[in-house]
Length: 302
Ligand code: UD2
Image (cartoon, rainbow, N blue to C red; front, side, top):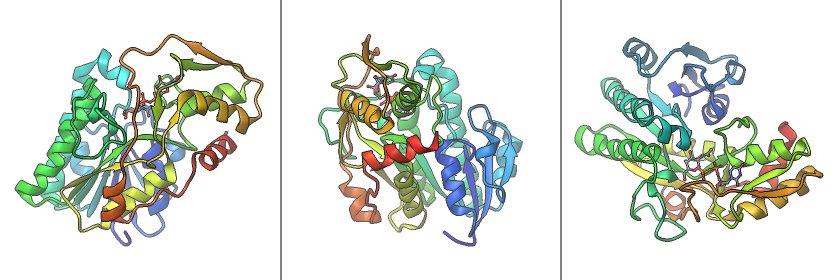
């Protein structure tokens, strides 16, 4: 996209801030963020910050006024948090997103929104195709599935241009290691500090880790594609076990950390991985960063 007025919700967060940085030179960027987990310092200088809550009607109206395009990245991303507070997750991840779709309808703005592999729950098979069964295993997954469906139906019912991107395990520079962040940021933090690496369970669980540059690539392609009213997996098509990941991170950081095995996480998905043939065929998306290169870039950032 170029010469457009673009709203990025969650633009001070991990994915949103990378998008803002990639788009700010050629577009007018508005960031809506309440800065609870997002950080002001991640927002590029020339973007305009609207500090506030997506759930606030006036804030949403101000943020969406005259926009051409919306990237919706704001969310409560903690699966565990959604188990502890399902109503809060629903308010933000589902209801506020529906309000955003309504606002987009008023403005006739395209919406590219963050869906999640969490909608598949415990998958029947890996790699997962978009049409595979969806039985989310958490309130978070249920909320993401609801908005994924709404996105499609807003196209069918109201001609609103939408694309839902079902992110698998996103990682990269700028993902901070808090309680609720991804395993890669946690392991990198532990490895760099020579602290024990905490593998949950036997480490045989597998994931499809997708580097932030490729997440951004998928969003930019979704912003201009003719394939609207659609939903795509965003991953690499490759998986790695958590144990293998731990070893690789120890290598990349040249760490003295010991790999330890702690109790398995309740409800942990055993195997997850994306079939990416649909996004490759329709959007011309291709993963460009290998896990090893992505880990090196992530470690360099610390
Ligand atoms: C990710 C997303 C989640 C949702 C889901 C979709 C993150 C933070 N979460 O959940 O939002 O989209 O994918 O399926 O990106 N692990 C350890 N040690 C640790 C931390 C984690 O072994 O200290 C394991 C964990 O048990 C799991 C794997 O690493 O098997 C990945 O965990 P995660 O929290 O990074 O991501 P996931 O797949 O549970």
